[in-house]
Image (tube, rainbow, N blue to C red; front, side, top):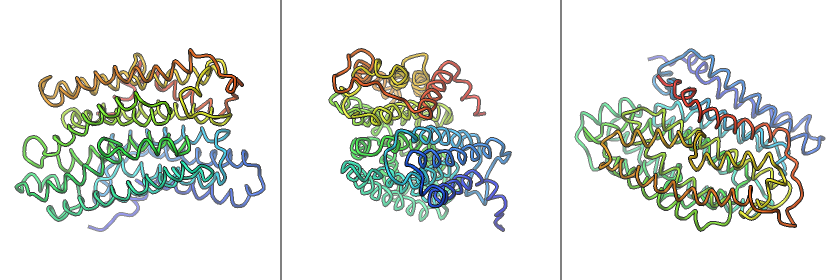
Length: 484
């Protein structure tokens, strides 16, 4: 078959827009922006990046192509379209938080790496072959390693980047080894062809090894126990905007790629129940228990959010189990709305850090007096993470848990996991209320009593995130009807 490069470029116009935006931001900063003040350089770089994201979103919305592209390397289906738009939305909110909150040098470099990471995320959402999936995942991962260590003034940032890189490099080796075994067993890198050949060929011990390797690698990417050890240090040490992107868009794209690989390529590996479901059940239960219980002992707000993310990863893995029968709509809804709440929470942290210290929970004391806007937004974000109606976080948990119970009833592993997740949601509510107690109830400390000026771009991003969480919580069909 002759490759159709015109078709490939048409399908990759969103990614081309992001890469071009990164190059334009770098070129502008190196020429016209060299003599400008730091704040002006941040605004210019963020504006160029937001324009690139908007153009990429326009191409996704107006694209009429559906189906496999370039010999099956990419698949443009509703899942890919919705995920790419979700990733772009989370990246745009992250970029909007940069002006006025970042105090680092080299704004264009930071913005360019954010766009490169977003390019990797969008490719992950549409990848249909093992090779492209690995390349997209590593493009995103390498970009995130750089973003985690971008703050050269803080040793914690360098430590976070080093740990993230070492753990990430090991997970990449596991993933590539698992992919190589799958290729050796099936003779194909196409997920559809792999699924077909695994259904006809008997199970092999090498297949078990490949599954373990792949699941370990994706457990790292999702920050799921027992592959979670990098998350608390990275969330604590990375710049707030970097941590926001790591915790939101990477989770959405990663879980979509996870679903495509497991259900699209390995779903029929042993005939009836896929062989990997037991491992996913164990990872989900361990993540729910460890993440939520360990979060109770945290006084550092970023580490608390990291352990909270581990707990949410456990709940999303329940959505992975249910996606085989009910489709990925519920899982992506959960991941996207979780990303909105997480980006917003880290956005509030970034704004508070711009005027002083925001490390421990006590640093949020009296936030309702220092900035009613920030306190109100944080209230919505934290309550959505806790799953309180009518916010989107509640409906995300509700639909995932209800689908899990419909799989094989309450007495099945998915049913037990759902009961555990509901119990851990009650535990999570306690430590989320600790955040709100400081921000909404506690009085200001003398050293943190000054009012906080919220940059206009950051305020707009936070308000948009709040509006989306409210709208998707009250009208979840706005999102779910995008899937056939």
